[in-house]
Amino acid sequence: MHALTTSIAALAALAVATSARAQHGPWTTPPVNASGVQYRTFQSATAGATVSFHVWLPPQYQSMPTARFPVLYWLHGSGSPIAGIPWVSSWFGNAMAQGKIPPMLVVFPNGMGASMWCNSKDGEYLMESVVIDDLIPHVDATFRTIAERRGRILEGFSMGGSGTGRLGLRRPDLFAGISMLGAGPMQLDFMTAPLGTDVPPRQRAAIFEGVWGSDPAYYLEQHPWTIAERRAQAHIVQCTEIRLGTGSLDAMLGPMVDFHAHLLALGIPHENVVVPGVDHDPALTLQGLGEAGWAFYQRSLATPCPQPADVNCSGMVDGADLGLVLGAWGPGHGPADINGDAVVDGADLGLLVAAWGSAT
Image 1 (cartoon, rainbow, N blue to C red):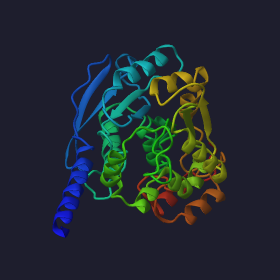
Image 2: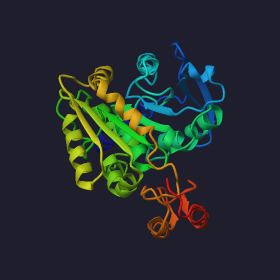
Image 3: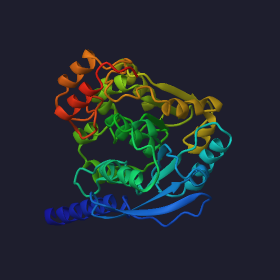
Image 4: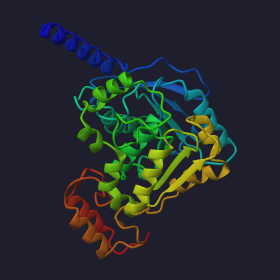
């Protein structure tokens, strides 16, 4: 009987593990047929595979052949990586045509079915690294982008909303604006689902295993809550535009209210919008933000600190910036990493000295 019980338990564990692997999906998707949208692939050194993405190009990309454009990276929710691309690209394209936001590229990474836009604990699916280390440099090398922080916005819904929090809050040196819409999971215990969610317990357990190795400590380490604590000062200094947007009927609202309070306690400036009468729906959430919602993109692309050596955004490169560089000396990202090479060292100090006394 003991052997039979052990065999059944082993088969059950195998089924969950297989489900955990299957819930990710392939690194490439079929192409989407939508106006202005292109299907692209690139070789990802991180994944060791060909990875696909889609990109929407504004009409000005062709009519202004020497101009460079900002990029909005849109992170999709769980399920189909491509189902929302036609609507989302049309939504932003219409806004650009009406002059509500500047012309920009909209890039749709392939986040698979349920990667959570996270590096899996087992190292099999390094989704965050693929986006940050491979996709963004590829986009900047392939298209005429504004290849710096002031030219990038990160936004997503549901799984893409929490992924935006993870990637965006971790890397204030890469994104001028981050927008977390209907973000989930945002609860601090993944297996304790917010009321109103419809993910079956077995599927939830498979996701927990496949992404976080069923390890609560790893889940919290990768949670936007924890990352915000570690990177609070960098976002305050960099003047990152941060927006939270959730429907009033969305099951994700409770954890997002808690996260809003957490950011307030950390002193991280941000906008928190609750959209009346809206459930967990990306289109209705975007529409419900109203005309005032376009100001987020405009503010994000208005460069507050055009001089990178002005580390504290004071308007002058001076001793205060020197103190911040010396205080952050060593490996790490952030405003003191002036040249963006992931280490604060003599190269950054040289750039600061060269810009000494300049006003921004």
